[in-house]
Length: 321
Image (tube, rainbow, N blue to C red):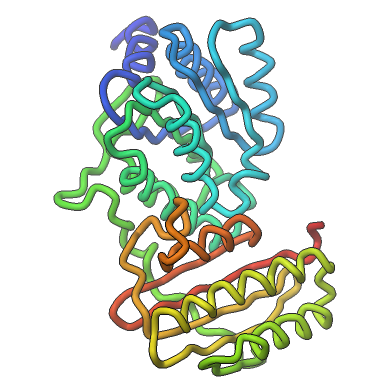
């Protein structure tokens, strides 16, 4: 059995060479904090700036433990940053770009107990795309996953999106895609379930005023706050405008709500070919330009695209300001 010094050396070595994307499987809070602190301290001790994005109070607790350590440290509440998982990659990429050519350490916990199934699915998709978004950088990314409380499919998804994993203080090779290292794992790119029968629908070909009007009327009935209503109307309008700009057949909008949120879904015959659309800033003429704005204001955005067309589902919670 290897000693603790060897395990510590393995954690420190995660920062050596190119992009390292490591899933950290933990079972208790003690090991969780111990390994995260060891990973961050090892990098900061070598002059590597660190970003730590953890849910709830965990980011601030890590920050307290690292007070007085040399080097740059940015701690973020993942409940805010990652409420929509599509916002995670832009934040990580901005930190990497701020320190271009310099090794950095990133800790991001994309899924935690209490996440909805849709949120967890989008978080796993985000983790897969990190392999593409940060390719060629000198970033070391540690992604904690609670194996005691998260559903088994989430852990299986994590195993399929990380080339390496860390468990019990030991680093090992994880799942390696044969040709496409950022490929969305099986089960996480399935078509979205259809809107419920109660959903209002509208076919649109040219008049976005009708689209905006339907969303605004439904938002008022759904008791969505005025600021959230404005953001949702803007978001649906951006997505529908993409339909008109890039297809010749128009699209279909569905609008409905449940106990906690209002949902709007568009479907058209277009195909978004850039897997990072909506997760990186693009030129205004690009189809992904509007999606970037949408991701910044909506609580969750689900995109499924291919030869059969593109479906985009927007979620907006009623209980948030």
